[in-house]
Length: 52
Image 1: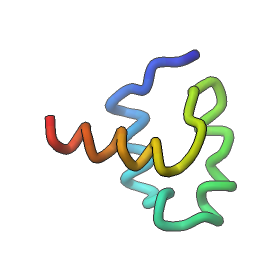
Image 2: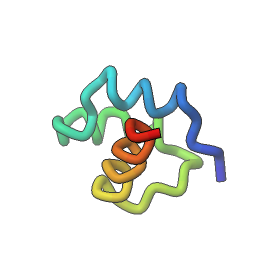
Image 3: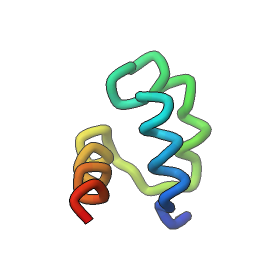
Image 4: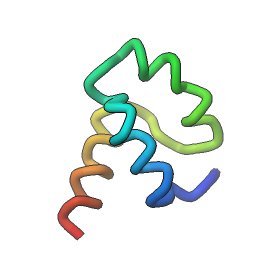
């Protein structure tokens, strides 16, 4: 499993993937190797990052 890096989170924010499910599919290769079960968990990770 790859570590979720700042760069990875920035890419998700830049592309607004969470708000656009078509892009979520398009960027599925971006998630390869990452243990991200669903969008809700990813949103929580992004939210937690913004707080820190």
